[in-house]
Every structure is written in structure tokens, then in C-alpha cells.
Amino acid sequence: MARWGMVVDLDMCTGCGACIAACKEENNVAYVSPEEAEKGRAISWMQMVNFVEGEFPNVHIKYMPRPCMHCDNPPCIKVCPVHATFKDEEGIVGQIYERCIGCRYCMSACPYTVKYFNWFEPEWTESTIASMNPDVSLRKKGVVEKCTFCHHRLQKARDKARAKGMEVVDGDYTTACADTCPTQAISFGDLDDPNSNTARLSKSKRAFRMLEDLGTEPKVFYLSEGEKNV
Image (cartoon, rainbow, N blue to C red; front, side):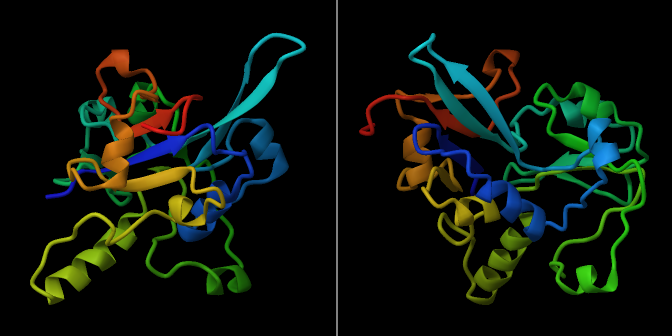
């Protein structure tokens, strides 16, 4: 059984935003009006966090793509009163939108602020709907949504593997953000597979996880600045 995770090399990330655009288009993420965005109601399953390193005049702007951390010990699951948030056997933390009652307890419990609430019913025009991914549902008003590691892609990989009488292994599927990154800064794969590049990178001396002292055990690792060899 795989345990899916991600490694982001901050040395290679240029902050181009291709991962954000790919995530939005792949997962039918709704756009909001400028007025709603000003209120902090924009929806983006993948965030791009900017931070500054060094002191003037040797200042460097760094970028950190931030999806859902898909924690092995996720606090969001523990507070959901209707079990709309869950973690499957392969470690992916998902949302059951039809079960969500919009209480937003999970948003309060998440220390990474990577969950989003649909404040209004998204308006989808006919031309927009025609270009959407038919494998991903359209979320309605009043539910919380988040990154799912492109779970629909995993389901397709499972179907193909089942037809061959096999299990899904590292390399059978990847996320839209990792697929699109022009510098290959994002690596996705099985963290428990010793032959997986993602697993190897996660054990690098450069690897760290966000707020790991909280005990959430994120499955998204970052590689800090340093030598390329691990």
C-alpha cells in the first residue's frame, strides 16, 4: 500500500504560479470577484507564499508553494462533527462535500490555512462548464474544499492497475501541480517506496516540514537552500 507525499525544492521554485493555474483548471476551482477576494474569500487549493531571506543589500525573495499537507495526524479530522473530512488508507486527506455542513471547524483546526469555504454559489457559464474536468465535482455554496492530491487521477490509476491484477505503485500517477512545474521543483510519489525519488528526497539533509513541532506529521516536505546532492 502506497503512502503518497510530496517534496518541493525551494531552490528550484521560481514562483511562476504554473502549479496554481494547473490546480485550478484540473480541479474546477471557482474564481471569485475582486470584491470577494478583498474580503479574503478567494479560493486557491495551492498557495504561493513569498518570504524574504537575508539583509539589505543581499536580499533574496523566495517562494514556497503550499498545498494541503495531507498530515498523517490531521487535526481537521478530529474536529469535524459529521466526518466530512477523512484520511484514506493511502494517507490522502479528503473531503466528502455532500456531507459537509459548513461549520468550518476543520478550517480553524488546520494550522496551515489550506482549507477554503464557498461563501456563494459559483456561477458557471455554459462555455465554462464545457471546458471543465468531468472527473471532478463542482462544489456548491456552504462547503469546505481543499487540495486532494488530485485524487481523481489516483482513482484512474487504480482502475488501470486493477484491470491488470496489480496495485498502484510509485510513478503510476502524479498531481497536476507536479506535472506542470517547468523546473520540476515538485516531486510526488510513494514515501514508503525506497526506490521512489520522492522518498529519497524526503530523507535529504535539506528536507524539512512546516510546523512539524505541532505533531501533525505533514506528508509535504520542503528542501531548503543548499547543495543539490543529497
